[in-house]
Image 1 (cartoon, helix red, strand yellow):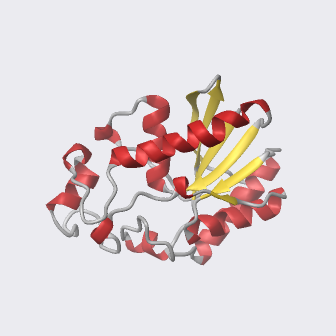
Image 2: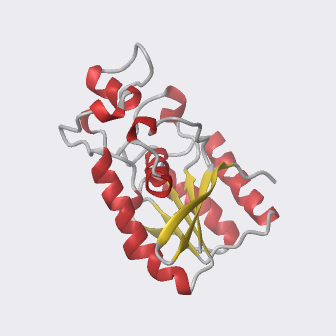
Amino acid sequence: MEVYFMRHGETEWNREKRIQGSTEWTDLTQEGVREAEAARDGMLAAGLRFDRLYTSPYRRALHTAQIIGAGLGLEPAVDSRLRELSFGRYEGTEYGEGRFADNNIRACFRDPPRYVARDGAESFEEAAARVKDFFDAELVPLGGSCARVLAVAHGGVLRTLLRLASGMPLEDFWKGSQPNCCAHVVEFTGGRIALKSRAVVFTH
């Protein structure tokens, strides 16, 4: 069974380089809507069909999934295990050299093993545990009945996927580009997960 893990479309906080995390209300910009529509059209042009569609509950992901699902004839199933990592009090703050709120959140993005999740934030390992639970409890049982599944989530979830599928070390968590509405493709065989393609961008 193939599973496509897609990042949501662009939001205003993406443009402003602000940490979104568990902030639920941020929605797509007009460009984000266009990206979701382009992904939908690209999938249709490539002849891709999906048996199921899952989404994070956060508005930016749900809106992306609704746009894509409308074209694919699928109703998104909301699963909270696909939500973005929580960054606690750092959410809404800027990221990038010279703009981090303090050394701890700078470490999160520049030296992840040194980051300390506190004040309601979620650690990298806690996020990995719930994403793995989504794999084991939700996806693995579908292997006998589904050929292809789509899950719309967030950048941190997609990077967590790479850790689980390829053994990527935590030090490399933020390395590599993940454009809005790109997808990592993995394959589940006998309960095991393997990375097939990384950061696929669909064009019509």
